Length: 148
Image (cartoon, rainbow, N blue to C red; front, side, top):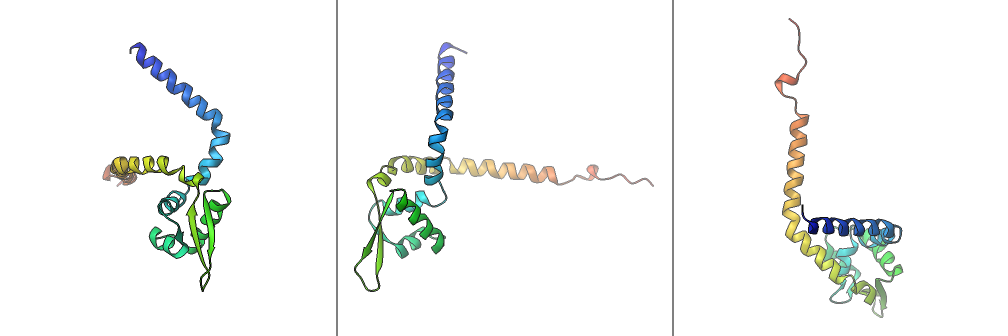
């Protein structure tokens, strides 16, 4: 080990300690933006305002209630705006705010990371599942011995 390794480890430890100290402030924010649908909703809204049903179609798999609840929360948190359109029937359009738009770069980096490393994560997960399955499957020698 050389002195550069020690310095690098010290920097990582300092950063880790700082992150832990900041956790009471960071955790509530991450809970709000890193849920199941927020990233995907903001990605759909990023290029242009979108109506509710179009959002629902583009997200595929989200329920009406989950989307409505997520949009209300995102609007309350200042990441999305809601505009009632003067149409018959009345329509509603959602748009990303500048605050929401500021998440674009970190979300793009996260999506790029997921694309680059997703296969490796799936492979590890499959291997772990296979390992657990083989541990749970008794071999003929593991059985109870019956005296004759």
